[in-house]
Figure 1: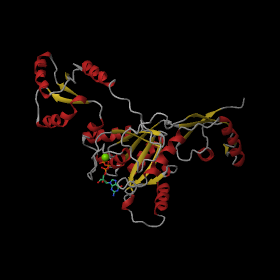
Figure 2: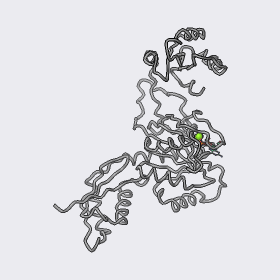
Figure 3: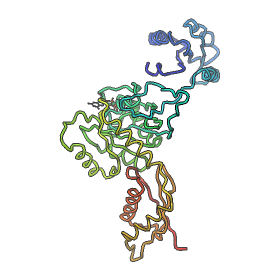
Length: 387
Ligand SMILES: Nc1nc2c(ncn2[C@@H]2O[C@H](COP(=O)(O)OP(=O)(O)OP(=O)(O)O)[C@@H](O)[C@H]2O)c(=O)[nH]1
Ligand SMILES: [Mg+2]
C-alpha cells in the first residue's frame, strides 16, 4: 500500500484461472485509482484462454491486458501500454534536499519554482545497509527515506530480499539498499535464507559506501568482521553504525571507549568512521549522513601526480626505506591510477618482496597528507629500473 501511494502507474496482476478473496481486496483498494491502473490478466498461456479475459472487463478498469508472464505472451502490448502512459506523467523536479535530513524528511518533490536556482547536484551515492539480523537496518532505511518501505519487526530475519529506495541529502542523490540480516553460515540452511544472505553480500559490489549496522548493546561479531573485510577488499567505503545507542546507559566518554575498542579489536576497520545513532529516535542521523558523504567524496578524490611525487620524495627522506637483501630499495614514482575504488601504483626497483611495513608507511602518508583518512586505498607495486 505504501508503494501504491507513490506510484504513477499501477499494474494489478490477476490470475485468469481464478479470482480470490485477496484479489477482491486489491480491486476494492484500487477502485479510486482506476485511472492509474492497468489490469493485467496473467497465465493466458494460449489462445484457448483468450475468451476468459473478457470477464475481467467487469471490474471497470479502462485497460485490461492479457499476458503470459512465463511464456512472454502479451508482454509487448503491456510495455506499449505502460510507455504510452509515461508521457502523461508530469516530470517532477528531483528533491536534492540541500538541507539536512534529520528533521526534514522529504515528503515528495519540493519543486524548484522558476527563478530559484536549482540545488547543486553532486551526483549519486550508492549505499547498502548490511549487518546481523535485527540490528535495525530496515528501521534506519525507513527513517532516512521518510516512509515505511521496509517491514520492521523484532523477529530476526524479517527482511528477505533487497529493498531499494532513494532520497536526497547534502546535495547528493542517494540510492539505499536495505538487505537481509547476515547470520552465521552454519545456521543458514533454509533455501530462501541462503539466497537472502548471498544477495545481501552481493550488494557490496553495487555500492560506493556500505553502512555496517551493529547493535550497540551487543557489539561486533566475527560475522561483521568478515563483512568488513569483504568491503575493504572491494575498496568500498564503510561506515560503522552503532545503532540502538538509546539503549546504552549514558556514561562519560562511552562513545570514545566503544570506538577505540572496535578499532583495537578490528584493525581492518581502523580507518572506518564510527557513528552512534538511534534509528528509532532519529538521533545521530545528520552525523551519519555527513560521515557517508565525506567517505564518498574521499572515494572520488583524485590526487594529482605532481604533489604526490613531491610528497613521496619528502616521505622517503624523512623515513628512508630499509635494505632488502642488503640492496637499497628505491621508490621511483607514485601515481593515482583509479578512484572509487582508490588505487595507486608505486614504481620501485623491487616489486617482489617489497616490505609490507614500508608499504603501510607510504599508505598512511598518502591517507594523511591527501585527506583520504576514512577510505581503504590500495597500492600496487610495479618494478621500474632506472632509465
Ligand atoms: N531501542 C531501539 N530499537 C531499535 C532501533 N532501531 C531498530 N530497533 C528495533 O529493533 C528491531 C529490529 O528492527 P528492524 O529494523 O526490523 O531490524 P533489521 O536489521 O531490518 O532486521 P532483519 O530484517 O530481520 O535483518 C525492531 O523491534 C525495531 O523497533 C533503535 O535505534 N533503538
Ligand atoms: Mg530488515
